[in-house]
Length: 598
Image (cartoon, rainbow, N blue to C red; front, side, top):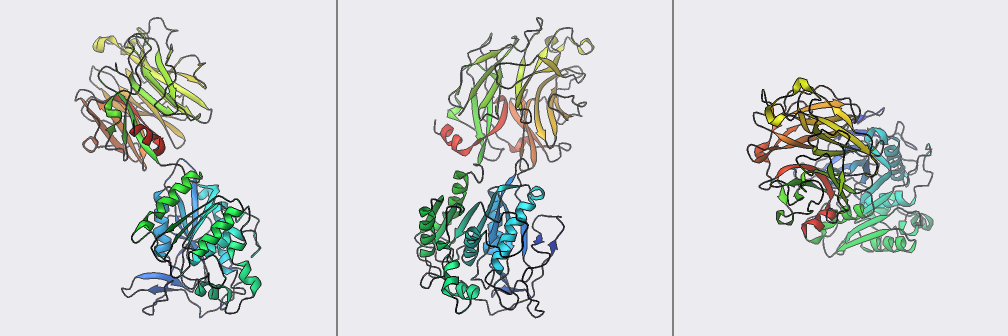
């Protein structure tokens, strides 16, 4: 614990938001009226400054707040964590153990809320012992009550605390049913807790004396000491917990964490503990040595306990040559630089169709957890190939799906894709086919007389399929469509295959429903080159569309934030040599490791 710097102390001003209007990094007031408060006009909130004039802490908090750091996960409800900075219950280390921790949590997909809690004081509280707990309970309840506005999962609301903030976090984890103010009954129980070099006990010889005196006073009763020695308050309903401590902690003995861990294990509460050889006290995100690894240990623990999803790696399925040797896979960590797996050899050899090819392989992960793949089997067949896999290594028996057998004159079924509709738990498979004489107004002798339109079928199990129907008739020769969901709409990226006058570019169409109808195609979104085989993904709120610059024998890409204004980023991407028309998707890091080790 650092003593209050005797250097400069200046007034600390905050701005708050109320009435459920929330913005990133702004402060939200916890209370309309602070419970059990004593009005004291002379008690003013201030900064603690170091010798360089930097604010290292906050003192004399009277109006507690939550500072909002929302994670950027638009497609899922987020895990959230309330952050309790340390400071011996006499100051709040709001930056090192607050804002910096929030930024780390955001980096692993967690929404974070820095709690500026009241520090126990008889000058502003009727009962200073419960003041911080009131704020912690209210913070947990506020997250649950505003989960919709903040896009939070109400079953994944955790708490993290440092030093005395660790005592508050463990108090919130063991005293969540204590009635310390009049609430509306919303649960104040954290779903998990992370305790970093925490004060746990109030017992002499184990506790941090400054924290104990600030919270309980100079001469607390034995009953009060026992009540706030949180290792004694653990039961089977205490939240799962991870503890981090350094052996050489000279301020808060490591026995605090050890005793809490043993109590958790005795009550069969999931728990994990990391005790580092050195690091001392107050190391925040780390200073040196092995304790630098504690954030990664916490991330792994959160993943293992299903509080956050496993990190994902970008994958690209593609073919080479004419598709004779089958499926190739590449990976990327950023979506720009792609590297082949398995020395760019095939993961699956084609076995079905007239020509037994595996061109245009499209892979998605379905609602059943399987990876489903469709591909072009031949230049002149009336069906497509299909297989599934749990791990992209071992595949089901390959299947030929005769999607165009109802039209005897069909010339081809090219570039099939799959989109999963989670609302109906249904897969739509779609592709381009030419039926001679079907659309005479756009028939041409160019391109060997091909005049494609997009068709589709739907299935729930890849055993039975709906009747094939026309999906998109844009008034021109169209091929290579791929569909992504964006907000509440479906976005189709497609190729205008018209050769006279030459188009050979990518366009966009939209629909409220997966099966259409889709809007008129947009103006071209690609440049003065021939592009085909688009595949799209959203990376950090940027849409990237990859495509085969097939006349240039290389891959290109465009990027957009709004799906309207596009920037060509072809010079920033790198693909394995010879990559042809493929699809982009994501896999868990654990699966990627298996693939990389093949």
